[in-house]
Every structure is written in C-alpha cells, then in structure tokens.
Image: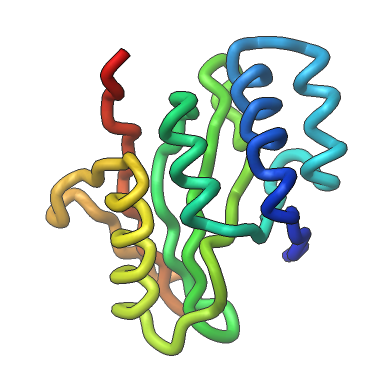
Length: 145
C-alpha cells in the first residue's frame, strides 16, 4: 500500500484538482498524477483535518470513512468522481491507531468537526476480511452561500 505524503502546503491544490476532475475536466484527470502518483486505488497520507475541511468546503463526493486493520488500525476517507464513480483518492487520516475503537473515534471526530455528517451507526458496515474493516457512510454537510 503506497504511503505518499502530501505536504500541507499542497493540500488545497490537490483538493482543487480533485474537484475539477470530479466535474469532468480531462486535464485535471491527467494532472492528478502530480499529486497522487498511483491514480486509482492509491492511498495518500496528509493532514487529515485540513483535507476533510477543504474537501467538504468544495463539495467533493466522499462515500465512506474506512477503518481497517493493517499492522495497526488505520482510518481513511475515499473521495470519488461523480461521473465515473471511480476512486480519486483514499486519504489516510493520521497515524496508525492501537485499537479499532480509537481509530473509529478519531476518524468520526475529524469528519464531524470538519464539515461532514455520518449515517447513523446502525447503517455502518462491519466486514471481517482477514482482520476487520468498518465502512462508515459519510456526506458533506450543505454549506451556506
């Protein structure tokens, strides 16, 4: 699993390119490689609070927070295109956590503090795929114009 680190100074630029790609801009689709070296199925590690805040502000489509066990518990958010329904970025939210409950708590806090709402807990999916995986549906809250 790649662990590409995006510097905080480049987060706003990356979010802008993701947004343009989501709107169907073909140049932006090509430009994604400058920010995300392994387009499709990639993982990008960055400042999670800043990424979630900017992504919510520009209306990126995110389908879920993903909590999974991989030598520790990791949390990420998947951002999708609205046209092809393919992942643009799977953004690792911070460091590895010692427990599943800690990873869930921190991911939920980061999301809700930064402009996202979550589906009710009974709609979360808990998968057992060799260690465990939790999908938490996530949506940007509407912003006032």
